[in-house]
Length: 380
Image (cartoon, rainbow, N blue to C red; front, side, top):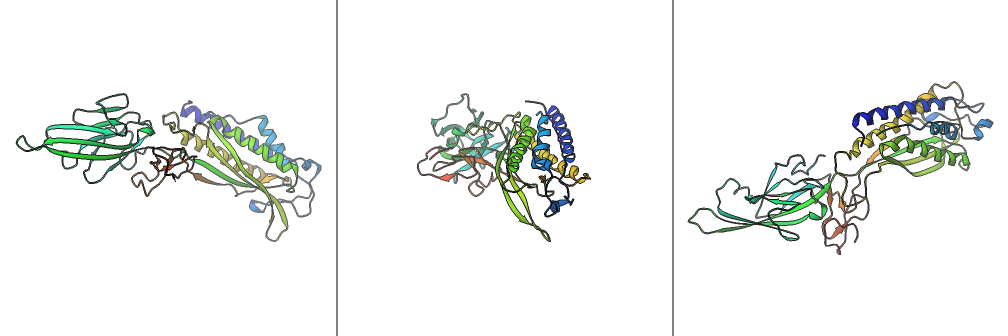
């Protein structure tokens, strides 16, 4: 994994190349008789026919081909719910005899210190205390590779996995004083694995286009996708074209013009769709995606700047200023979901699906399924 300094330097190099590529756009020939206008108003004069140079996609394939000849080079939560933070392993959580205590543990992290006492007993003197922990798989031993139980009954999980989620109980037997009879407490905890949402960006943009039945629009779409993909590839990100539709648009005080409506996503390549999402520090998906987003926004902004400096008429296919829009979309790994009503202490977490529910894809909801009896089900 590249360092952040190297990642940033190569991102800047890619931005500079995108600028130079956008500059090449401004040198493309324009059809005779085309008029120049800014913003959403840019279009050819109604009735003006493109020159022979624009029988090829002038701004489209020609410009994008130039960029493809010199592809940009880019080298490359803490949330422990509302209860604990994965960096605070000294956090202590007490139990209750009246209701189960919900605990959220980030996947592949250690849990907080889970005490086998109530808040009232925490600072009390206990004579001859006996602690016995019980989990989904039966009684817990004092120590193994994934669980540690201290002599005072504190439970600690190491490198928590999704299949360790479930109901845990601790039986506490003690004497308040040496003369008093034994007292018994049964404390219940529900422990959930969770991960941060695996988000992606969804972009929409519009281009002035050739006639909707023109093959040049199709060629342009392919080249644009190639350019965007190369722009973010070395950030271990990918661009996916969801939709490219050509429409006739009636402009104010003008005739019809052809426009291509693009919808595409930018996501991380290393987010494996499994129940064990990458949680290492090197898997900094958010930073890489932000760099990819910035590169794409700069790429479109440079097209506007170059077109604004042209003295020649505009080409037939060009980006329409102000139409680039972006939204942040959350998604969870299969077997996880977001539900602020069920998990108010971890409202933005992708929490492992409970028995009776499942998530088969990378959506954000656990769906009902009466056949699932495990935590983290990815199929019904």
